[in-house]
Image 1: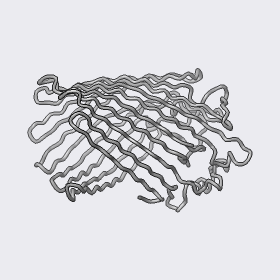
Image 2: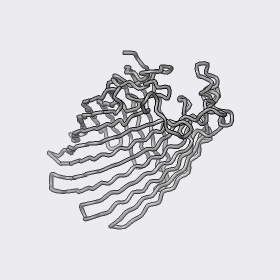
Image 3: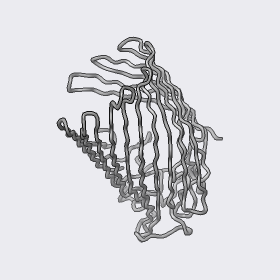
Image 4: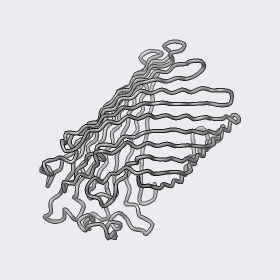
Length: 393
C-alpha cells in the first residue's frame, strides 16, 4: 500500500525436481491520481493550467477515476535436458486498463503486452569454453489511446482513437570463456521491431491527410559485444564493449529513413578493502536511438509531431560508490554524474517537429540497504536524489 490510494497484492508459487522446475507469479495493482505540491490531482492540474485547452480537460464524470489498474502473470519453466544442458521457457502477460495520461490529449483505454522467451544453455563445453547460451524472444503490445474521458468527446462530439500496436523479436548468442583466469564473454545480438498506428473516429478508421499516425516503422538492430572480468589481488576490473548498427524505415514517403551506428563501452574498477567493505569507480558511454514515435508520429490534426532527422542520444557517465556486506546486512551508496548529448526532448506547445535534440546533465545520489532479520525475513530500504538540467544545442 502507498500514497494516493496505491494498492498491490501478489503471490508466487515455485517448485520442482531434478528434471523440471516451475515458477508462477501473479499480481494486481491500482492507484488513484497522485497530487502535486498544491494538492491538485490530474484533473485539477489540467483544469488550472491556463495554457491547456478546455477540450483537453477531463469530463466531470471521469474527473475522479483511478489513474490505472494493472494485472500481471509470469511463468518460468526450467528443464534439465542433461547434466550440462538446460532449456528455459518464460512468458509474461500484463493487462492494464484505463491508464490516464494527463500530459497528453488522450488516455489509454487499455494496454496489453506479452513477452515470450526460449533459451538454451550449455555449460562446461571444455576447460576454457565455459558456457554457450542462445535466446530467442518475442513481445507484442496493443495500446489504444482515446479521447473518451476528455471534454473533446463530451455529448455528440466524436471519440477519437489512436490505435498503436508494436511487436518485437530478436535472438542473442553469448559465449563465455575462461582465459588466463579471466572471464570473457563474446556474443551477437539482433532484433527487429515493427511499430504501427492508425486513427479511428467513433470506432471507424480514418486517415489524416492520407497518412497514419505511425506508418509501419521498422527498427532493425545488429550488434556485437564483449566483456572481460578479472581479479588482480584486491582489485576486480570489469570492462565491456558493444557496437550497434541500427536501421529505421517507414512506409510514410514524406519522412526519411535513418541509420545509426554507436559504440558503447564501460570499465568498472572495484577495490576490496576487506571481506566486508569495497569501493568502486566506473566510467562508461552508451547510446540510444530514437524510437518510431519520436521520429514519425503524426497527430490527429495532421501535424507531424515526430522529427525524422533526430540524432541518437549518447550518455557519458561516471559512478563512484561504496558497498558493505556481511551475514547480517548489506548496503550500497553511489553517486553519479551523467552528461547526455543529443538527448531526445519533447517541446511542450509545439505542433510540428516537437521532438528535439538537446544536451543535458543528470547527477545524484542513490542509497540501498538490506537487513537479514532471519533466514526467512529480509527488510529492504532504498532512497535516491537526482537532479537534471537541460541545455539547448
